[in-house]
Length: 422
Image 1 (cartoon, rainbow, N blue to C red):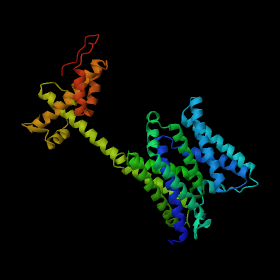
Image 2 (cartoon, rainbow, N blue to C red):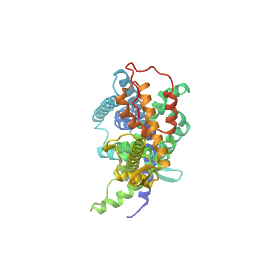
Image 3 (cartoon, rainbow, N blue to C red):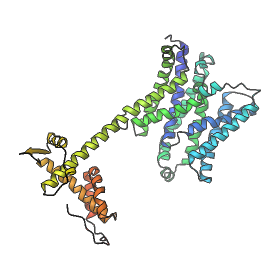
Image 4 (cartoon, helix red, strand yellow):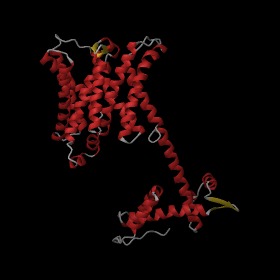
């Protein structure tokens, strides 16, 4: 791998474009508007075309202004159609962005004789060419795309830092934002304007399609690793930067392993981001697939143990049990290893510790039966099966609340039924 100055500028530009998208992607994610980035990245096309037709120039200023207006218009129309048409916001989003995208294509056709449009550049970007388009500032020659993306990231970071509380409250509880004197609708429109600005700024580097990946994937990956928004912001920025680095390195090295010269860095950035997401999906300590499987296994074992303890307790109290209710030898030996049961003269009995645990389970079961019959108006013959499930998820705090609740006077059932004796 021959690393040059051009690679450094490509990587730096890719990093800041990914950071710009990932920062805003968190707020789209928590608002359940991740696909709004997709809608805006398509819907800004008429804004770009209209700006060119009006000004006759492809300078960054008019283009960005047209894109921002189109992005805000997308958000306004999406909310308006969802409210007036009484449809889901995802449906109105699809209507708006496909319509605006079609309008943009018509405008592009109208201006086709005066502007060159490279579809591959729009879709995948041209990160490899960004170091060749330079601007001289203070005696330094810098890539224009690098300056644009760093400026957009600085604007996004400054606004998020200044209005973080407003963005956060507006995302999680709009009604609380209103009572606090904030204007959640204005904050929403500001977010949409920033997304539109970022999408257009990143067109040249990672393309409109891959802007969506950078808006969604780092934030979704960060959510698997943390449930706190400040931590999500930091993690998503690290993931975005990591995907840009791994993407560029992968574009230089991986294709050669399969006999190809190279591939686009922007495409490999999306691949790297997706790979990091799937790694988090599998190995995330709290919500990953492995953690979920481990928790399910632990819960199943705990339920088996508690059912076995309850069965031994009831048999010790002289109750008749069906053969299917008796614990298996495997469960009995597991209880023995944990100090809950012991075998004496071929008879399994609970230890004092096991009896205490069993009484706790039985107590929770009885409380749930009384609650379901007296307060939820459930039939007695149905309450037992439901209580069998609820007893395993009852914490000591829940048991105290249930005990206080069932002691309150209630109206007896009309049929005069009572709980069956245990």
